[in-house]
Structures are given as structure tokens and as C-alpha cells.
Amino acid sequence: MSGARVGDAAMSEASAPPTREALIDAAAITANVRHLREVAGTAEFIAVVKADGYGHGAPVAARAAIAGGATRIGTADLDEALALARAGIDEVPLLAWLHTPGRCFEEAAAAGVEIGIGSWEQLEAAGAAGRDGRPVGVHLKLETGLGRGGAAPADWPALFARASALEDAGRVRVVGVFSHLSGTSREDDLAQVGAFERGIEMARRARLDPPLRHLAATAAAVSLPEARFTAVRVGLGIYGLSPFAGVSSVDLGLRPAMTLRAPVAAVRRVEAGQGVSYGYDHRTTGATTLALVPLGYADGIPRHASGRAPVLLGGHRYTIAGRVAMDQFVIDVGDRPVRAGDLVTVFGDPVSGAPSAEEWADAADTINYEIVTRIGARVARRAL
Ligand SMILES: *Cc1c(COP(=O)(O)O)cnc(C)c1O
Image 1 (tube, rainbow, N blue to C red):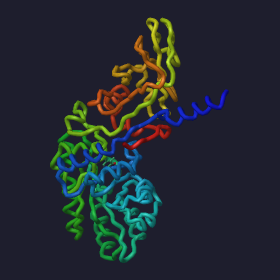
Image 2 (image 1 turned 90 degrees about the vertical axis):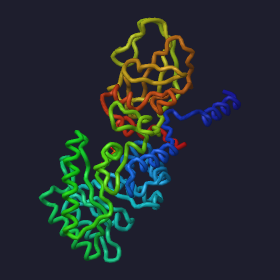
Image 3 (image 1 turned 90 degrees about the horizontal axis):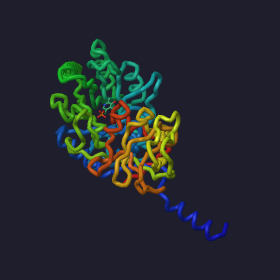
Image 4 (image 1 turned 45 degrees about the horizontal axis):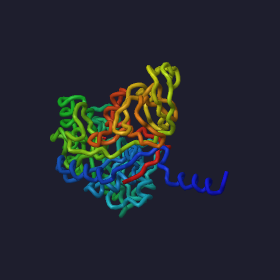
């Protein structure tokens, strides 16, 4: 091989698009937060960036959300919040609410991260981490009917009394009280609203007056005014996705922020009767061109969407042909002049013609939350 050809190869490698890429439209996240803040109308807006920002990249999502007016950033795990603190996100308080037994809150206290407290043990751990003059900010988590985490109503009086005593001792500062809805029906959600209001009243009687009272996630922030209180805790919506079946992003005034795409890795001209991918679930019906897309279930492409989900290539839509493999799937493009290197859009903003995350969710019998959040570590995130 001549030196010139080696040089050419190196050059084309440098300029080639990544094998797999998720484009993240940070401006869309900012605009979505701005819009949702207006819709909810609450004093505070907690942007949820758990699970690496629903797959979008937590630091990018957090910064974009703060630019759009988020007044707090929420994560599930404390380690997610601490990573954001280390990444320099310090314009607004961080809050983490899911802890396993024995978790200490010293690091959180030092970093100023607020803690969701769902049990007596967690409250004691927060109190132990607080120092006079540097109390740990806590949000008391009430179980109002979802059947997951949080303190049960029978335990509220003792929890509030202890929180009040720890506040007097300068060890904790009760900045919030919160709960989470099931979204089962309006009636079920309103029952939880009622339970939450009783919890707030009980907290007041224990001399607690937490400024942040938050119950609504995206769905209720958009559609259940009774659940808005003084803050909403919004995840899915900030990424431009709709939590409602049959209601699109556009209907909600939102722009999807993630576009998943990859270049065609190879094309192959085949005859009729060619079996495609494991198990030959797809066989060609005539002479056709098969295009190989380098995205598989390792990258978060649901195997369950084999033979069902759409992609966009050269302005045309195709359905995945045969089974999704670990690293790749195939599309049958007929006689269209597809070439290796042409970009395949898996999902993105449907306004641009791309399939939506909802279409993928339908094809995989799941929800759009899972489609974006499951995108794997091999996929390069590129913030626009
Ligand atoms: C994930 C989560 C949210 C955000 O829910 P969305 O439906 O994505 O808005 C809010 N609160 C809690 C407790 C959560 O776990």
C-alpha cells in the first residue's frame, strides 16, 4: 500500500461520521423547560435528569434545563447528583431521592445536595450528616398511594416531629415535602392529591413549613392543575416527549431533543428468497438491496421491535427486516440507490420526517421513556 493511500484512509477516518450517534438538541430542552414552566405556573420547577438525563446526557440536560428556568435539578440516585456537582452544576440546588439502606449523607452534605427522605432511618442519617450552621436540606417523601417508596401515613406524625426537632437543632432544613402519582386515572390521582394535602397539613402542625411542595411529574404538570402545588418535578417533558398515548409532542408544544442515527455500514444486492438475519424471519420477495445499519440491542434498539419499527433513509421510510441483532439490523430498500455511508435516522423529531420515539415504543410494546433511556454507552452523544 502506498503512503498516499494510507494518508487518505486516515483522513477519511477523521472526517467519517461516528458509527452510532445520538444528537442532543440542547436548545430544544431549554425551550421545552421554558414552555413547561409557563404551563405549570409554579414558583419552582425541578428538572429531572436521572438515568443520564433519560439517555440524553445528564450534564447537558441539566445545563440546558437551567438555561430554560429550572430552579432545581432532580436525580434518583445520590451518586448521579454528586456527579453533577463534580461536573460543576452549581447554579441551582440538586436533589436525589432514591437511597438503599446504610447510605450515608456526609458527601451530600458537603456538596450541598438535597436529600429526599422516605423513612425514619434516612432522616436520622441526614441528621447525622448535618452540622449546626450547615444543615442538610431534605424533602420528606410521603407515600400517598403509589405503593412504592416514601413514609406511610401512619408514620407521618413521628417523622414530622423528628424532622422538626432536627431542624430546631440545626441539623436538617426541611425545604420540601413530596410524593409521586400513579397516573392511573383522574380519580386515583385526585385521591393522592387529597392524601398529600393531609400530609402537608400534618407537617404544618409539626411546625414545618416546607416551601417546596411537589407532587406532579410531567403528566400532572401538564394536565392536572390540582397537583401542581408550589413545584413540579418534570422529566420526560423536558426532553420533548409526551407522557400521554395519542397526544404528540407537537400537541404539547414540545420538541423532541434526541435524534438517533447511524450511517449505512454496507449494502448488498441480493436475489429473491434471500433470508435476512438470524432465523430468516424476513425473506426477500424479489431482487433487492439490503442495507446494514450498525445499531443493535447493545445500543438500546429493542429486539422486540424486529420486523416492526420504522427508520428514515434518503427521505423514505423502511421497516426493519428480520431480527435486530446485538450490533446491527438490516433494512430492505428495494431498488432505491442507497449507498454505504448514507445516514439512517432511527428516531427524532417527527416534524423533520423522522420516526418518533412513540412509534418505536409502539413497535416494541413499551413507552417512549424506555426508548430514549435505554440508548447504550456505545452510542456517541453529541450536543448541538
Ligand atoms: C422519574 C421521576 C419523575 C419524572 O417523571 P416524568 O414522568 O418523566 O416527568 C418525577 N418524580 C419522581 C419521583 C420520579 O422518579
